[in-house]
Length: 241
Image (cartoon, rainbow, N blue to C red):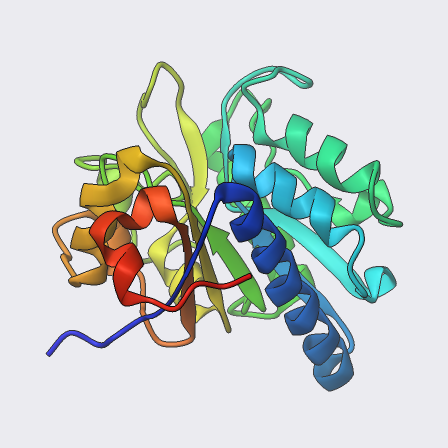
């Protein structure tokens, strides 16, 4: 039987972003109180950048926060395709976070496979061996992908590494966290907005493991969706503020 997943439906993408920031801040305070640090992995996307700017206004013990990347496109430094470019703009300009507290995926390396292993080693240094992240933020693509775990790519079968490199997807190769480290995390926070996500969100909530997102563990996960992404499901869930 498919395990139910915790979902909150909010009116619009900005409300989703603010609610996500509240959840991250609460998890950060709890993690620092319990273990002295908070380790968060962040995906890309417009709503997540709004989420991170909102996080800057929350009560967060920033000195004990480390931010890692869920995935990254292989592109030059500072390129608008890079998640890191927007991640730094969203956090460093709005929160008292030092640049060295953001751990960038080394996608500029000429040897991407070695670079992925290097990033996995850095995760072990900050998050233990095997590394356990406090929170992994994920999105959901209209094709069912999450992180850069994309349909049909060999990366979906990687079980012996926490970081891997994909083939070309939407004109670029990617570096991504894999299922093992995502599924070890203490919390998975899904942020899903936009009407183009309706069909895939339904399949995900139904536990469809034929889509990449469906293979992420559901316990300790929460889905935040706006009315547009929830579609007809919006009427079934109590609205947040």
